Length: 204
Image: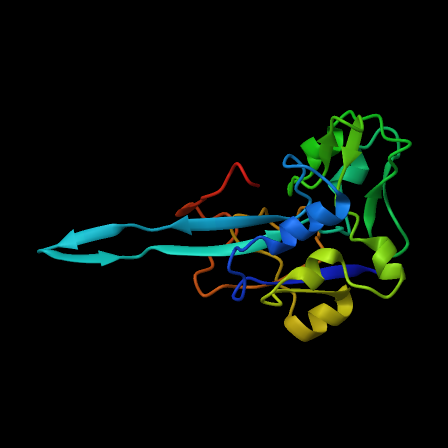
């Protein structure tokens, strides 16, 4: 089975959210639907020592959507079979089968599935599989002005960029085995870090 994935270069990402907006525009979704989300993780403080002020402040951005995991938690808990993994590795929801129970959203550690009240069922990033079938890139990848996102067969991305899929504030990659590769920002903190916090919780 082919498996596509994403390379996320956090060292290039400026948090502009063009990827997020391009996805919303392409899918024609409103404010409440964010298939791709940009986390701003920040921390540190200023300290004073004998009149001298020093700081260890840090901040960085990580762009995340559905990671089309090898072991997708959403698929495991879906009672209707609507959430499933395609032969190309994309995890999608069959909207005509979904009953909108929300169990997938509760199970996913990346908060990828989202309930659409207007449609009455769950929705999520589908990797733009229809564009990919035509030889095109997912809309978020092509929109990034800093080229901080790359897409392709995950084996090729790992051969090119390594295998790291962990960074704060994301959960451990061992939970679902996501098909992503992350290049750390210089300020990156490890998964499980407690020295920082998500600065834009309402957006993500």
